[in-house]
Length: 287
Image (cartoon, rainbow, N blue to C red; front, side):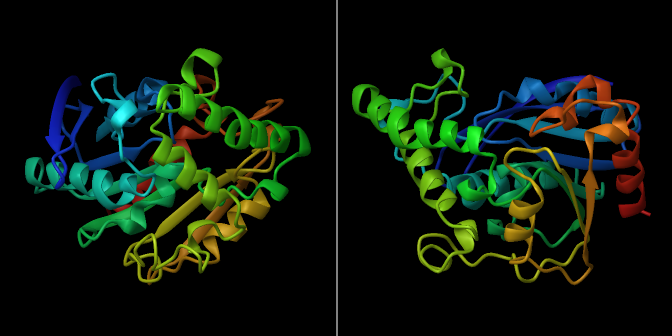
């Protein structure tokens, strides 16, 4: 396996950066879309495992997620991830590896926004991990309080002082453009997220959420503070696919763990517990 850095441009000229994990004999391309404001390196062990199983993996950054971006003057929106960034990375991969089957894996926002992309004709399948609505009342009270503080107190003050949300020094997440945070906050106020009539078809495109042409598999854990059963149902009841949508609900106990939560799916302890099942599902998608 070799690791290769790449860059590509979105239609609006924004440059995106990422890494390709290229096995000697790849059997398919996996575009992995990260969660919001999560360092892509966090997912490297998981993607390395997939590459060791002969999947060519693409790990990349959204706009506004690298130090070369001018966050203070940024006009980026959260929906840009799906309407501009995800399709730009896919177009690059399609051009670079036209003869390999194409697959998506998304974590959190990285799975939510795939339907905003239009260039999905050759997609063989999609595995979504912890992809759901993020409705506050469906979260545990302690996490809900933390979320309210971040979105309604910390973020407005930080944006006023800095011109962007300076979250990284305080351990919340990576720094983000204020337009991303505030659009995200608006969606989180609705149980059906951006499918709410206030946004869907108005501030965000209709997209392909009602007419996916490939099988979709959704994985979530009962102890996930964000993507729990209630929020997963709230999101996926708005999505349909001609090839069906399946679900797997995880419990920490079945893996001998105390918790999985929103990020535990990708920790190295899952290498022999959850990751083999994901590889098996990928294999079935490209038969």
